[in-house]
Amino acid sequence: MPFIPHTEKDTREMLAAIGADSIEELFDEIPAELRIDHLRGVPEAHNEMEVSRLMRERAAMDGTPMCFIGAGAYEHHIPTAVWDIATRGEFYSAYTPYQAEASQGTLQTIYEYQTMITELTGLDVSNASLYDGASALAEAALMAVRTNRRVKTGLVLLAPGVNPVYEQVAVAIAGAQGLTFERLPVDAATGNVSFDKLEAGRNPVAVVTQQPSFPGTLEDVDRLSDWAHGEGALVIAIANPTSLALLKAPGHWGEKGADIAIGEGQPLGVPLSSGGPYFGYMTCKQQHVRQMPGRIVGRTTDLDGNPGFALTLQAREQHIRRTKATSNICTNQGLMVTAATIYMSLLGFQGLATVARRSHANTTRLVDGLCTIDGISRLYDGPYFHEAALKLDRAVAPLLTALAEQNFLGGFDLTDFADTDALLVCATETKTDADIDAYIAAFAAAMG
Amino acid sequence: MSELPGDLLYTKDHEWLRREDDGTVTIGITDHAATALGDLVYVELPEVEQDVEAQGEMAVVESVKAASDVYAPIAGTVAAVNDVLADDPEKINAEPYGDGWIVRLMPSEDIDESELMSPDAYQQLLDELDD
Image (cartoon, rainbow over all chains, first blue to last red; front, side):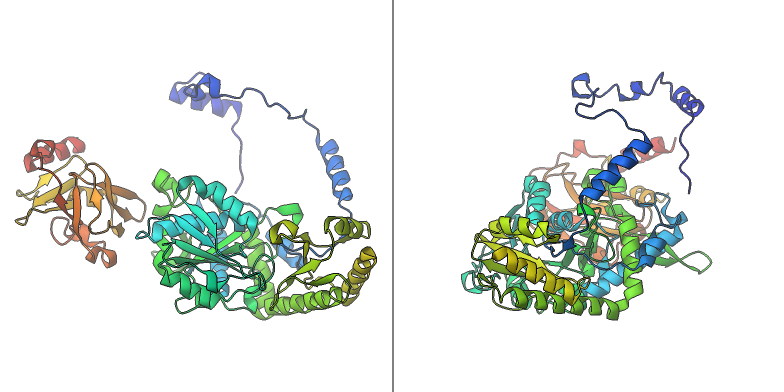
């Protein structure tokens, strides 16, 4: 549907109808001292030719390095059809349609997406997506507080393997709303929760577990979920969607299953693009749906009995509940979700499992090869999925610089997170055996 | 519009109150409010033993296109909630003054009836809204 701007005549007529002299007059109630009437630091406008050239030059500075970094965003092969279809005019609007039911195709796409994500996570209902995985954690924590009303502590316990960036974002969004975030004790050998050191009776409103963990380990999610439920907490799962083709779905963790599952949807057909746009997914048990933020598409029948799609449970949302909405900062990432839906449709469950298995096999080859080099060993015991932490006998940053000169993005510097010289590496299905062997050789050379 | 029960007190927020023999006060929303909201699909109830302030939010009633807070007309402690509404919120549309009650409060202070409306006064308010 076209977006037609107002002509000057339209604007004049609208102003006349409401009795205002100018558009500026509509903003009169904003005090003058709160207005910014200049944009400091914003350069002069460039024309299209200049901007195109600038962007081409900047893009070329990235080069074409081979990427072995994961740490929350993953390079996967995206079938050409995904973005060829997603950028068709019918889909190519990145926003929720406001005349929603007029856009049956868009709603059906979101409905199919919701169906696929609920199947992947083993939970009952999905929303139409959120900004990204990190803000989804903040939304999930706030949702847990609304749902688990008996618990008044506002205490959210995070497993040691929760992505530290997710924690920062959750604190930024929810920290001023009475929530506190604390880490559960870590077992230094495994990188996972230390069950021996868990402290009972703290009345957490929610316990958050990330699987696979940020440093790539696999947590005993069944045991941790059962412990959390025993403490009266809701269980929030953060899961990589690719991994769910192989690992146990959050809805089946422990005896009761996770209550809410969230995560970064980027691995499902969205390119790395220097950090975004991505999308966050969120699913939950049916009983919690009233407190879930964001849009939900439902299937219904029209007056003639024909199937159709409609936004449902809208009374939770900000356009109706205003300040009391389940969220006032969320939106769905329509275009990213469209790409993800096409990606999942093209791969199917078996295809996604093949991607997951191939990524695991490649990372295994990478880790085994790197660990033959003197001074490199596994940081943690235990299995991993498609990412693993390595302990090094020297500072990581100079090694990454040396590898970059050989055109390798060598991994994520885990030194701050692990409090020791450590590197997080990942090899998805996009890497060949020759790629991996070349990287190992370059690493060995850099280690001297 | 059906006739207003004569044994209830009313508020300008379209709630009704019934003083029970045991000292508690049963509260619901009026037929006018229920009709204006449309078919209700969800009711969020407070927890029993929760304290509520006068004019504080006590419950939320939600229809397909709107959600509305139910305010406590008096201060008190929640003595009971109508759990039936969890599965059958349309009970409020069907029997707003009967089985569609929402909350029963134990007042924390004497009820000042001058703050509330008689059936006649509330009827007058409705008549004015119609004009």
